Length: 80
Image (cartoon, rainbow, N blue to C red; front, side, top):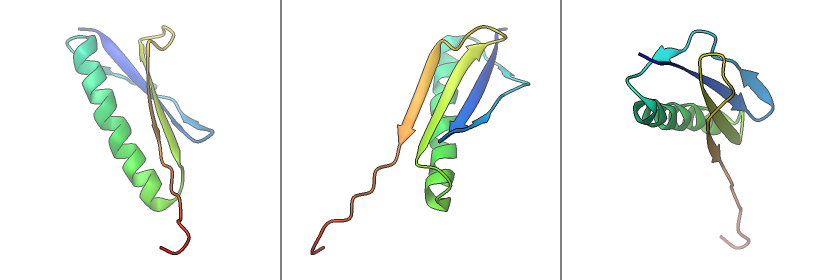
């Protein structure tokens, strides 16, 4: 079973995934990466610790083959 690593970037801070997780295939790993990114982004956005979260997905020691990018944009409107 392939082992996938999800390296997390919160703004300019990198959190490498040293251990990885086994998934049946790339599609299952992609779905888990989206869920992971959404969960991390939610916590970071609410805490105010980041406004951009990226999950780079790689298989073992290979270069990333998938990037999930989530950005928060808040616009305060005049008169609102």
